[in-house]
Amino acid sequence: MPISPVIKIINPKEKKEKKRPFQAMSPESLDELQDTLKEGKKAAIFINRRGLATSVICQDCGFVPKCPYCDIPLGFHLPAKLVCHHCGYQIPMPNTCPSCHGYRLKPLGIGMERISEEIKKFINPLPQLNLIEGEMPDNEELKIFDKFNKGEIKILIGTEALLRPQLEQADLVIVASIDPLLFLPDYNSEEKIFFYLLRLRRIAKEKLIIQTLIPENKVFQYLIKHQEKKFFEEELKWRKSYLWPPFVQLIKLTFSHSDENKGNEMATIMRSKLDETISKIVPQDLQKNFNILGPAPAFTFKEKGVYKWNILIKYKYFESKIQKNIDPLLGLNLLSPLPTKNELNLRNKVLKSISFRNNWRIDIDPKDTL
Ligand SMILES: [Zn+2]
Ligand SMILES: [Zn+2]
Image 1 (cartoon, rainbow, N blue to C red):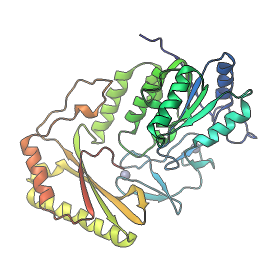
Image 2: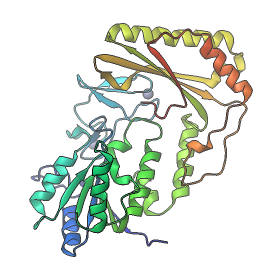
Image 3: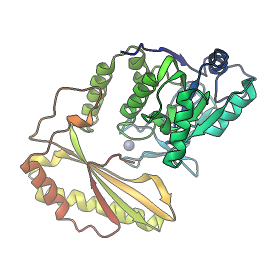
Image 4: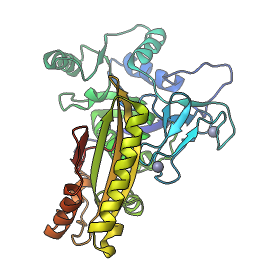
């Protein structure tokens, strides 16, 4: 068994000095990095790539605006508004933080270049430093991992690519940016991030530093205390009260259209059709098992001139039972039961009685709801 690293959480908002401009790497993280390098050791620095500038956070108090109906962070859209990607709820972007009334409600996220520039300015002498990200060819990536494992590269800055098994260990691991991922408006974001952190904790030989504006989040709290099982139990409770897998089967209907208004109108018509169909063909006592959300703009609302909307059906099991035993290595989705024949038939009957045209896509058990 490897020895667990020391875990240290740094909250940049705590040591706020008024005159200091925003820094992606906190002074304490830079000091720790300098100390590690002085001893001839090496460090890996993690930055999430997904979810950049998609939600907003108050840089004073850590508040993140959430949808009052779905309890999921609202996405930031231009012109300045906040939109729920599940049910379509929206509000104008507030000028001040609804929680502390401060003025620093800002889109989340920083990039690798920014981090590497700050390091180059501060660390002296600067050892071999490399960046690694998912889009690199495999052999390039392997070369970098190999050099880092051998100690030829001393600082490795990376996105999700750092989580690959080819990376053995680093004396110091700094999680420079993780908050945006935590607020990706998806029901299982916290679980995903928990898996990331477990992996990063395993990579860290001596010390794991996490920079976050929301240290009180259960993801960090359970990680520090090594209470993996408790994390999953609490997450499961939340999923139960807000009806997410494994308590429901998700059916994601995605609609694409090149005209924003027309597309929105057609997606709304589909929603009414669905409601109508369910009230007609589903036995009355089972109608409440179809919970429909949307249409709401998809997470990447406009792509190559095409707009996308999602309607999400949360289909609650009425016969099968969810598994009870949580395996912290595998997570919660494996607790989902296989639908029974009756459950399948009813679901398929509803979907088949609606004629979906070409620009609709049906995804059962989607890997995300974005
Ligand atoms: Zn909502
Ligand atoms: Zn605030």
